[in-house]
Length: 386
Image 1: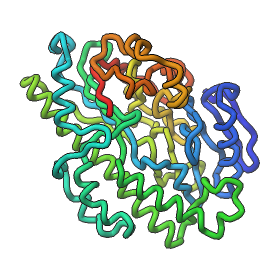
Image 2: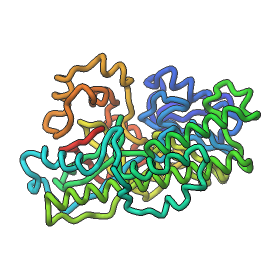
Image 3: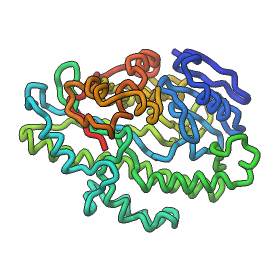
Image 4: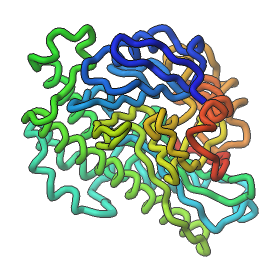
């Protein structure tokens, strides 16, 4: 249920978390979004909400005739994928170190990329020449980064559900090409005349029917499809690893969802641009994935289609602590304790991803029972990070 309503200058802000638990600067950011002349009906705030660069993470914003590129974020199309296998917990070896090593040998992580393109599909790149001229030099980079993980909170996991079924799961985005396209269009929007009087230039918008909006939609939707292709290609490589280790493995249909993206939808009898930054579609009957952290549970969910959230739900647990603060607060011993029993990195490079730096995934799920219902509860036994 909606936990709080904040009166906005133009529209209200509806929160699926207690208002007093939202950090002040995130609330101020939301209030600026609610004051924009194009914001429609209300702003929906997910229970994993926290301050974000440009716009608030965990915000769902509907706009009439406009879209704000910063409300999408720079990792266009970032999202999740999960596949259930026919394996059971007893099929797994006592040590998963070898499986992790094989995954890391097949799928580049961090700043690394493939030596050559390993696309699961190549059709998307027929349109590359139509993208903004400033990214044309990045075609080879984009080709080689398709099927790579990246860093930060992105991950590849092997999980068990409550019935001991083995799942494959991953979280990734649109890599460098998505960031470059986002940054180009955010900068363009800030220079447009209609955005001159905005109190927060980070929330500059493109207006429907303009050449700038047409160019942004072209590049945005391409980047969203690239992010999907990235996850699709990683799953192809991940399946190769699983077949090598478990020759009898079989795979179910993949569940895939974006959580940094734009969709053109109809809400409250109006056609609007919906930006979900740190939020998934929870349209009635639609499957999605809500991860916790590298040491906590994740959930496969089915949307309930709650109109007040614009048919949305959280994209994860959400950070409660910045990366810098996490590094200062926690030690390697803390990391090892909080990831006990999980085959994963336990070094200084991932201390900022320690589970205690995130909100409680159990509380986040409790706060959005009216948005999604749980289909499967997963717990990782292996986690790969960049």
